[in-house]
Image 1 (cartoon, rainbow, N blue to C red):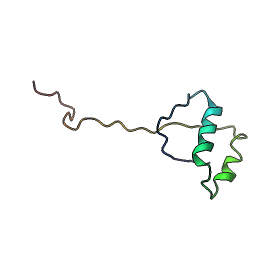
Image 2: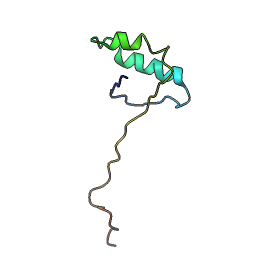
Image 3: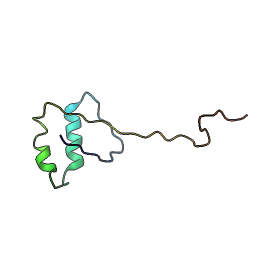
Length: 70
């Protein structure tokens, strides 16, 4: 099992487009070195591939779960 984490502004790959996801992963880790090339060599043979976006929602701190006074 391998896990990569990388910033990808404008992450715009459909969750059904597995080939597009693999292409994005290859682009992001290209030149990373270490074990990345060995891991990516198995990318097309893996029966179990998953790529998703990790996101954070930032809310206005003045709300704090309460309605604003008029």
